[in-house]
Amino acid sequence: INYSNLVMAAWGTYITRITGRSEACAAVKRIAFVDCSSGAFLSHTDEFIASADELAALVKCFDNLDQVPSTGVILERIHFQATTTTEGLIYGLKGRTAFFANKTKTAVLVAIYEVDTTDESEVRTAVEQLANYVMSIGG
Image 1 (cartoon, rainbow, N blue to C red):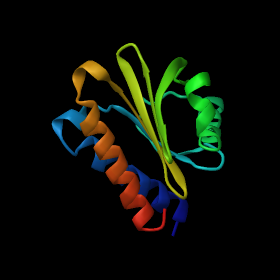
Image 2 (cartoon, rainbow, N blue to C red):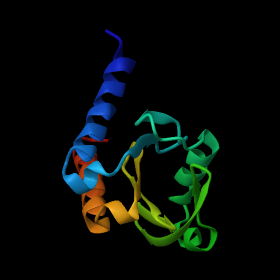
Image 3 (cartoon, helix red, strand yellow):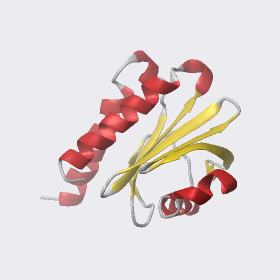
């Protein structure tokens, strides 16, 4: 049994859960689960193009959330203004593009979407519910 493939399939299932949740969340085309220590990809959609350095920096943001609003977050070569940070959650916005990053015990879920095509509160709810589900099963 190739356990690596099983783990990747499980993370892929989580991605399908969020993108298939509703019409609004179907607008979330770029989503990834990354390791909460290193920022390494666990699973992601093909369209997700953030670099390894960007993801490593994002993961480190959760160590000092108070600094994130002043520095922002760079993902997919976009410098987002971080307008909301709470324990385990970062929200950033640049023009019409926004992201939510939610940290669990083992991973950070990152969802990037276009603001004018979806309801922000619905995306946040879907991301938080999925992160809570992952945490409830030990992840």
